[in-house]
Image 1 (cartoon, rainbow, N blue to C red):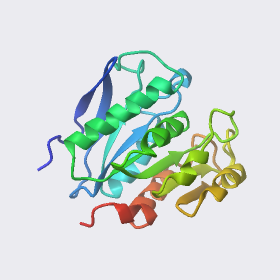
Image 2: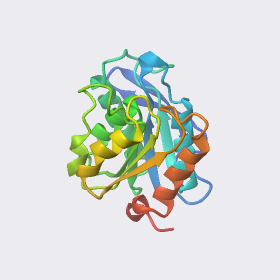
Image 3: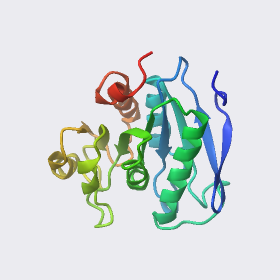
Image 4: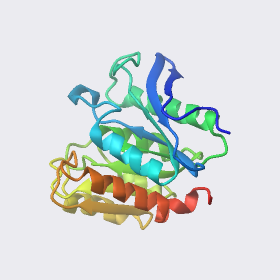
Length: 223
């Protein structure tokens, strides 16, 4: 019996107060748990952003409990935007909460766009985090978004990128991620942009496949 029920709203304690969050369990016995971070809050990103929601559905489909949350200053989360620095604290608080609630489950951490940088950075060196997920990596945006640290991740990493992503098209993502090692898997979805417009079902399918039967499944519980 797990302590939190399907669709429960969650308030995660953090230094500035609390984070607003939503948790969803899969239909069957969980194989793991996942934190998914949302895109840039100053550009309208929230835990309800379509790509975040659909990727969380894919994780649920693969048998993971999912935790989506609003960064500081978004929705009813306290605090204010902190240029990605304080947001890493928020992500770590979400990992702490999820690990405390489900101490026997392996954890996946990631996010979309700005949330990918925050989630991947927060999870890469955390021993509780067994796998990572990046969606729409802004590899062409500016020097702040350097994903070289993933080369030393030592855990499976899935990146899903729209082929026509205006912040990092498929070929640029391949150029950036290719040298980092075979533990990084890049899925390029054709005919779509940064927001996976018109291809959200393909996004969900890619995430499900990687954690259900692909490299990401190897670190999850066998049910």
